[in-house]
Length: 183
Length: 253
Image 1 (cartoon, rainbow over the protein chains, first blue to last red):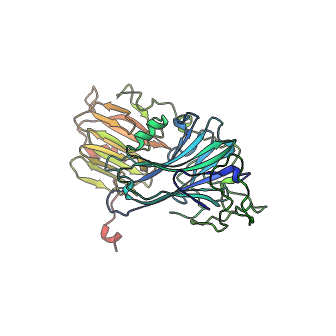
Image 2: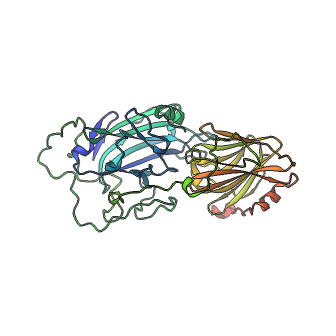
Image 3: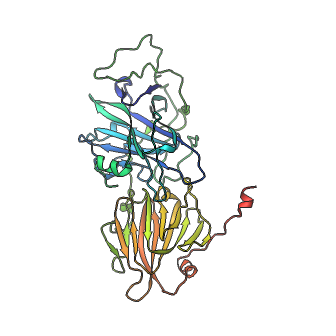
């Protein structure tokens, strides 16, 4: 298992010939509270070469749990969520697969990442053997309400993974604008 | 969180972990005891994965004989809700619900992000997937049993004269009613889509907004009841029976 820092990348398929399926595990811990809590939701966006989502259907999250062709699917509750990516079945039009966490924008005080003690994204192979782990660095996240954890992207005929930890202060609205999604 | 990899996701109605057939070949270890890391593959400017320790980091890998995503079927095309149910206008395409256009359907994203807000309701009534029912009036009194979500918020509630459903936990909801007061109902979701319903129809009947969940999506339907009907009468008309809440003194023992 290799730990990654924000901005680093790793050659997934070049270093692991034959790797066809990767499992993305996302987990976090929040400060316990008796009152309303920030509720983190993982989301995956399949983007084309322009960096925008291919379509609104190429957004995968708990209520839309598979991409139209089925190459990306939410499939387990270990960690907090697990996402399977069948790399060979990802449409050619998809250049990168972005993994993010957002705070659900409930009108009754949604909260932010300030309540998050730790969060991680790990990349494993089809047997759930961990290849990479990105622990989101702790910092002042009191204004953050959505965060790109990392991305899988095509490179030289294979796939690489980049750790990011890029926060948004305007939540899903900013995510929707960046990726041209109707949210 | 749960660590039982063999358990099927009962909340996912058409997808579950694939079961891997009996293993016939040992998987190639990530760190194969190489004396020295090999040269990076062409184009690889990142970290080497081959130098990883053979000891798995937490969380521990599951036994490979249980479930694994490696044996995915050739095609897993999902059957979407619109393919299974009759056509209905998309939420946002109809600005006003009435007897001529009584139904709209939210998509999976509208149904699951933020809150379903209904301004102008005098009360909200809910029924969750365990058939737990309850209702709250805009004046504050409540009947039945609240459903508290993992985020410590009620699944359905009234706040500032508005009815609210927590869409993060839409999968807990079976159906809900918003009984109109004397002002129009305005319904909105996170993406800005909205619709309005008059509080009475031309015959003077009171509007009730009936919310039902069909798989991943919510459907909204304007229904009409006698204007003089009180809330319990309306509940009965829609088949709601309030569940008796458990006494907290028993639960806390």
